[in-house]
Image (cartoon, rainbow, N blue to C red; front, side, top):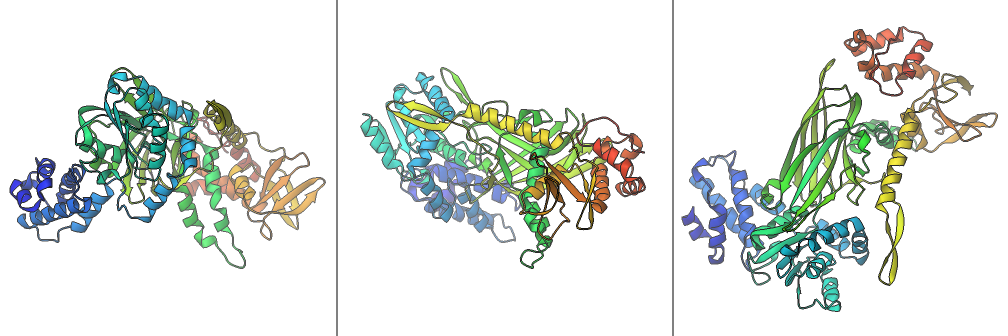
Length: 612
């Protein structure tokens, strides 16, 4: 291997290349493992590029080595050079750096207003400041690097903690702001601003392995969402002294199954537009399934109420002092939960906790559901169809996160419920992008704070948390609340018989559609979609109360299906009955009998119901 490097590598790359490929057992290479093993070595080689060699030159060397190794091993198929190059670039900080996405990325983070919002996230800013000022042994008289410096805030905290010199690495146009603030505050001789993508930095910008302490605010959605951690690790490999400090030092990524009927109902109702059969004379309903699949694949970023978690969380700890950035190309999380109560499982919730482990103190930044919200909130990955689980049942599966060239991850989830009554039940969801988040459930409360001579508004995270939990509780209470006073009553409008049914998901679906008044009874108005009563009616009483009414002929089928889906709550003899047989049984009952059974299902309980 050394002979091949001596022959192929430029002189200034020979040392780092030998270090990167050290330990590669050429004889162990196979067609199956070739791409993984060689791309891992190549990634190390790119990270340790020591001087003014362009990244593309290092990539070219790695490709040349790979081609030669492939020939020497006498593999018969074609060498996957294109895939190798793709891996090297996706594992880089920003992938192909001329891509349109990164132009947009730097444009957004080059705006003063963007950084004002981040700086005024006081929980975030104060945690970093406490971690830095609380560890003088890691900063006083030290050489520090701030990766992705932005406004320079962390670099300035390091100066306040006594740092001798800070390299503020900022690839975007905010580098001018860092220089301006450093000079204005008397730190111009201590803050060295480097306006480069980190992979393009040379030894002339910062000597290799010369930094005592590294700081970075590169934490993203679900920890790795913006792939900023990779940038920090590349900087660590090239510039941090052996044993140097990293802030944050490690992070714990957590998953737990959740049950949130209100969220599930609202998300399921959103694609209702595509169920219409007369949009300007066009029947759209054939595309409803696709629209629903797309909606349920969107990751929800919002507050997770701790009371909705139905099993002990699964934790994975990532130590940034030793983590290999190549391992972040494809992250696989395997879990095995034991349900701690009967629940309708609607998916997985995720969050992270970051720890700053210093020489003097440890500081924690938490985005967990039981703590005060941060701008990261939490995330939820939905299943396309809920799982009815009972206490003690096992929920196993995997969450795969594949790095993509949108500076983020595409997630896929495979979940199996090992049910006592129904055997294994599987749910899968894929193409869930951490860059394409549904943030519509976020609501903010604000407060005024004073910074010196300026009074400004910022998010009040304590109040935001309290109001989010209050609103969720109200939504769930409405969903599981007492049926309307009209429940079970009938009304005839335009020769069609309707019946009042407690069907909150149908009510939500109808509320987001444009409606007209179909008829009135006294002061009460019945609203429907214009020209289509199949979706049901909303009765709005004179006092503002709303109830849902369905065509009477559809009520029986709707209630039977609702019961069959939840058959695990029925008496044991029904739990093992095939769905089709169970439907046939209920179809033979009187409507009043079905109504009585259906009403008991409005709140999930473990009580066995007898429906005769």
